[in-house]
Image (cartoon, rainbow, N blue to C red; front, side, top):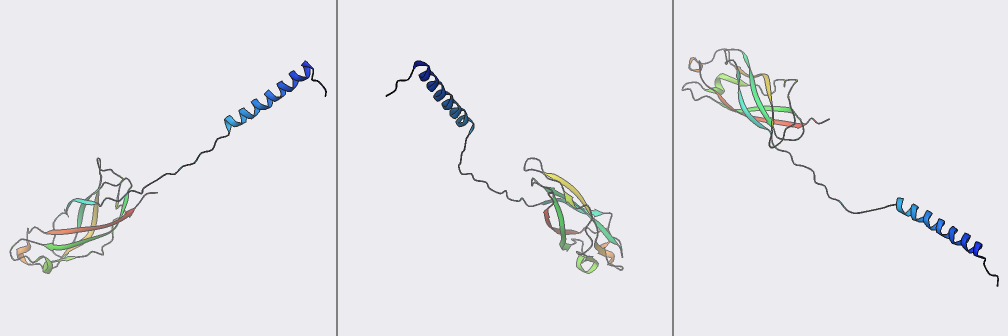
Length: 162
């Protein structure tokens, strides 16, 4: 059997160390990993109408603009897609609201019926001016002059996030 010289042994050991170092360098840069994660979609918060009123008063034969202030506590903007007014009443004696004022729920929605994104701590609000949903009859009862009217507001909306 042949003996290795000191020089041959040094070259062999150096080569093995160099290959091992290259392997260690490759191993230091090659990484993998795995695991599981969980995510949960948020929930919507219903819009809130914080005020509703009329732009001016109801007058015989004329439609009136309803002004709504809508509050959004969602983290995304919302587009109002439908508004319904119900339960129109007047406490004024002799002024039957249903007989003297027509509710026109299919009046065109305003083009700008978007409420910006808000949060639970900082809700966003928007003022919506809806033209024409209430129309006083051309010949209302005299008792309706100066009468107050109340009504309920229902909104439908969808996410307006882009």
